[in-house]
Length: 429
Image (tube, rainbow, N blue to C red; front, side, top):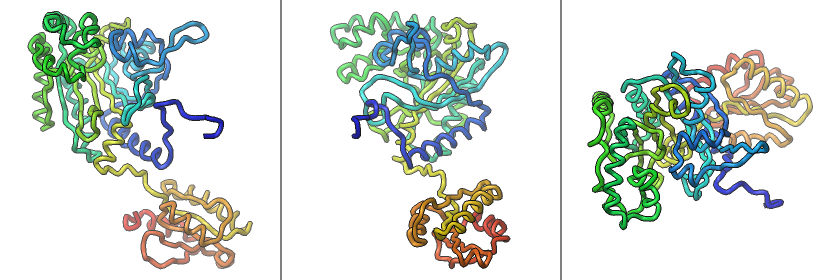
């Protein structure tokens, strides 16, 4: 590579035509979220490091091992965001969005974690993040899960399944934590180094261990649902009953604890068997204590996030088309100045008259034959051809590129009148 200029490991360029697949997916998700009343926001990539330590948890892998953290010129510790929820909560606190208000918000963009790059897992990755602030009852949990289920249906994705759990209140988790410490302490010699370290700081994270040697020990560990407070049990039962009513299939997974410390009550994951080890596609849950944890008043909240790279991979695996659509019209003509000036003016006037039509004008020299090859390669449905003879006769030639119809000549004065129905016709799409 020239001058050895290369991308940072685990941070990828997104080039054509892949960029259009990304945009198509984001547009479809944005449309769904808008129909549910969620509003789009943007928050910074950089936040104070303390924000993530206080929200995600200092004993988590993300904070301990994976964050991109540095001191700026003033000596302030800053971190590239490893996830979006903390930044959105910080923004809500900064701007007073939760003072006697409720908000349904979403954002999208890159996140950063320093980990071993592999397929579906990168150091710069992208998420679609959806959050609701101020809604206390189980109805928002149900809507958030139902909305994600509708996304799979809208996209035509079938190889996903829903796992649910409840983490209860902080007090219930503390009781469970004490029981869990007693259990794992009795088997401390069987724990690996990482789990022994977590035993003193965050024993629930041991349940999320991927070490196969611990599978049996974890399977026999006490179950959090046995220690839930009555209010959380009632809340979770209402969520499950509503999902039954909506015919949304799910599995209660008592080992689902999520990787971030701020979660409480309902947590869920949509998982797939289509992407190998990277099974989680959409993950979320409630975090009712996070606002207070960050210095604000108590605000009930819930959210979920989708990994865009994984979702794109799943769409590809299931044959989901994410095309933005090909060009409608490719303008080309002879190399003479008069023809090229006419095509320039015509392309802009057609864009004014037909704003929903995708128009490409051939740039640069070339024979009509070579230009037609490029028109065909572009995917356009029609070629509009102008030569000196067409100019003299006051017409243009329309050549269909995707059907066996005959080429036709159209008077310039009737061009918009003819093109509108032709290009709008489903027969040519």
